[in-house]
Length: 208
Image 1 (cartoon, rainbow, N blue to C red):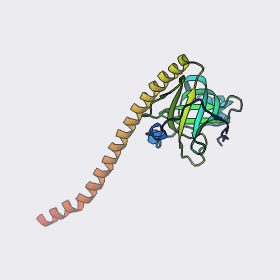
Image 2 (cartoon, rainbow, N blue to C red):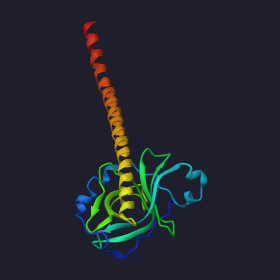
Image 3 (cartoon, rainbow, N blue to C red):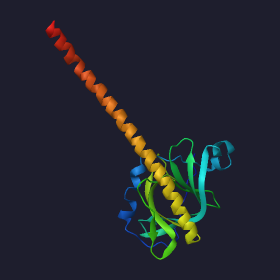
Image 4 (cartoon, rainbow, N blue to C red):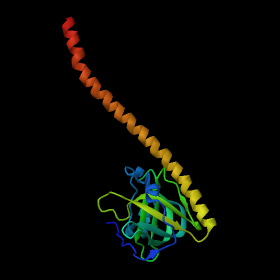
């Protein structure tokens, strides 16, 4: 079973409030492309870890926006990772709390949502994603997130890596979409052929 988490309730004013409608736009575009959610069993399991490829890792502070409190709340502090699991075709963002190893973030890097700079800070980015870290039924929750690094240089490096793997995900999802359209077209052609077969048979009988 996946280890569940409990959200911190301490509020922060570090990220300035943005228009949440704009921030979460397209965040659910990865709904049919779910990340591979892992729990604590993977942390100490070498066989499981061999299936996970980490391409980027950096310490940060993660916030989620609470609609109930109308404020940003601390989600967790630890290393944000960009990873690809052997069982998935896409790169995902993962963060475990550094002390408790509780899963705080698990989301496919969305193909459309951009990182947005936060007013008043050059080391913090806001973005939206479909998070599965607390998923009980296999369904993710669209979250407005803010991620803060120790300085602007580290923040800019994260942005570059995020956009790099975002582009890879976008290309992969586009191909998957085209493949799905092709399969649907084939099925429709088969159904059409089945419908036309009796008509053709009837024509042949009338000729005879």
